[in-house]
Length: 232
Image (cartoon, rainbow, N blue to C red; front, top):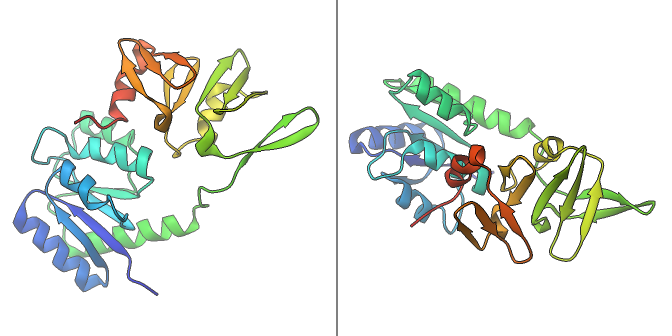
């Protein structure tokens, strides 16, 4: 059985080296050690690690929380925060990114090892995000691959699910559909719209352009949208 690999995102070299040494002593493989968000994306471009350890305060303009958001929403990569920050605002932001753990510095090897073991155990018992959805159309159950859904539009207690080639009406609320699509790259951009990030062609003031649709951006959802995208 191959070793589980872990990416370390920490901009303090001494701390990063200590963590890497501890991980190897625990029997894990160090995927890479990087100090900023851009280097982290470069590191996972070819192959994803099994888990990432992410410091919140990183060098550069983007923080570890922004990286964690991308790991969760775009890459479905499990991760844990390692940080000295535990104020209420930081905790509020962290909770929105769904980390497996939040380890406060300074921590010892035992703290790190226990949290890693629990994190990997949690991953093993969670069902894999695979398979298709089925929608009822004309007394048939039609299979839809989640990655082919471009967007979802709410109509009262019903919703239209769009793919590049079809539109399906389903008797579910947008909130219910959003929960079913969680972790698959979808983001709520308006009280009535859910969008697949992979199908966005451009974003202008108040509007998202897809190949076959224009989606309004609600003011309450604008920041969440920008938190989910990578800008260069």
